[in-house]
Amino acid sequence: MMFDSMSWVRDDLKSVRGYTVLDAPDGTVKLDAMESPFGLPDSVRRTLAEAVSSLPLNRYPDAQAKDLRREASRLFGTAPEKLFFGNGSDEILLNLFLATKGTIVTPEPTFSMYRIIAGSVQRGFKGFPLSTDYSLDPEVLPSVLSGEPPGILVLASPNNPTGVAYPMEKIFRAAKIAREHGFVTLLDEAYYPFHGETALSEAGGEDLLVLRTFSKMGLAGLRLGFLIASEPTVRLLDSLRLPYNMDSLTQRAAVLLMKEVYSLLEKQVAEICRLRSRLFQGMQAIPGVSPVSSRANFILFRVRGVSPDSLFRTLLEKGVLIRDVSGHHPLLEGTLRVTVGTDEENGVFLKALREGVVG
Image (cartoon, rainbow, N blue to C red; front, side, top):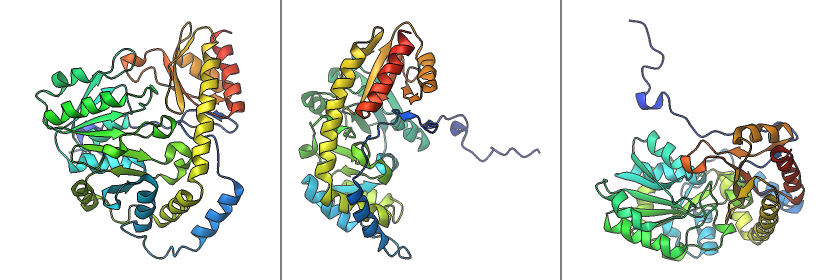
């Protein structure tokens, strides 16, 4: 028998498509990944370097991340026992999907990792379409959830890649319907800083979990996310997570940054929101471009008279990298997504966009 080098791999993974990260050539204006365009001040970088340089790297990190848990508890006003940390939101989603059963249900288009991670752990997954304006209609949920093994309803608000935030009354209505069908609700608030409305005060119970990350507000390189859930849920996830999942450098850096510069990060977020408004207006002024009002740090837009793929390549040739999401879902046909950059970066993008659409 001839040896098949892939015979030991799960059949359902042999053709799976993972999350794609685009390469940015040197000198490219990088507006594809929802990163903050602002770095930390030199004084903070020096303090951070000094703080991490004294770490005993020959020793394992604090397995319970006690200082990190304590500082996050103080900052966000929730009990330390209701916090679970991970290397970005993705690791938390992986642990959560591994620990639970039933179907993962979510409105689409949304963050692609929900479907990818569910598939990787062989969980049932069911997506249902948002309204054509990308809003959420909770009243469709009874028909969506009926007959499904009770699992997790995942809602992202503000949503990626649409930038649309769902009113809190709709989120709580959806959570109520989900509970009636035996589902818990996970609210992904990755883009909360740019929106300002949160269900955090309602989290920590048995049926509503809130997911947050530090990535979008300027600390993407730390890969730090956290979940607010009930104490039994946190204990369950703690029993499944890999030992020492939060390394010493991340723990020390995150504690220092939360203590010393969180207010600075909030000011940077406010500036990004101001730049978002200016960028939206600039895009509206270009014929053939229809931006979607956003509550995140990016803007989804539809183009006419040019294909998204062609426009993406034209912008890249002009030194601007954005994201073509037109093939991700039928409701995204004709769309691309751009991250809010600095004033200068946004100006370069708008000039290239006008030339790519209007000529």
